[in-house]
Amino acid sequence: MSGGIEANFVKRFTGGPEIRVESMRTGESASVTVLFGPSGAGKTTVLRCLAGLLRPEEGKIGFGGQEWSDASRGFFLAARERGVGFVPQEYALFPHLSVERNVAYGLNGLDGLNVKSRVAEMIQWLGLEGLEKRLPKELSGGQQQRVALARAVARRPKLLLLDEPLAALDVPTRQRVRGELRRLLKEAVIPSVLVTHDRTDALVLGDDLVVMNEGQLLQQGRVHRVFSRPANLTVAGIVAVETVQPGRVLDRGELVTVAIGEQRLLALGTDLPPEIKEVFVCIRAEDVILMKGEPARSSPRNCLSAVVRGLTAEGPMVRIDLDCSFPLSVLLTRQASEELGLKQGERVLALVKAPNVHLIPRVT
Image (cartoon, rainbow, N blue to C red):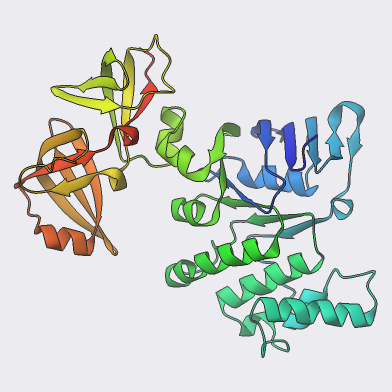
């Protein structure tokens, strides 16, 4: 058994869904693994099985060489014996306890002096100085999150589990707290598993990604690889690849030539099986470069003539809808869009590097 999580199990609910996890693995280092997928995918169930709060009907779960459960022989290690820190979605702070008493909760087994020292260490680490005597209702959402994290880490767990840690925050607070949480998780030097259905949370917080849907584990790997190279059409939809078009393989060499209607594109295609001829062509909006005029000599091999069909502001970004004989979505900063002076109906060039054109086999 490796130093991280190894899980193959099935959890059933009477009259409800079946959650089936096959070959889930995480590294042993202080990495952050994100369980990602739509609401109802089974992410929280998986997290609770890892925590020992739910007992699977089939399979095994282990961590760091220690067996946590084996349904075939009726073995199940209780949650309190797994050495896991758990941060629930609503933080579950005790409303009648102060910040310092919330952090101290669960430090049974330490003498009073060590409890005081550990609490002070957590307070300083998370920047909660001056809030020690406050009750949870007197804290902001971000402060409550830090107290919940302090309480979980104070026990010095082997593994940290977080269920939608940013879901209870309003949008401005969520944007501010994301980077702070990432920093704190890395500083804690504890491997973490985090549940979210938010794409930005996954990209900012995670090192590795496990994509789930309808109780099934669909794909796992490094965050940016899974987002840029989804294994199938379902995963492409879950990770929100903006442009997905049916295409046909015309030629294979160093690069794959694929046709989308009248257009010809070059793709890397190293992971495309040689017998596949029909594909889905996937292009992320942030991987498209826009320019006016003639392409530079160093421009990417895919240079498409396009017409701007629409511009939509999305916070600090602008989404541009293009027609280049197929619909193509582009995401630019507001500044980049203004510098180009883009207007609906004008012609532009859309540049896409071959490695950023991902091909998924299409079953006809």
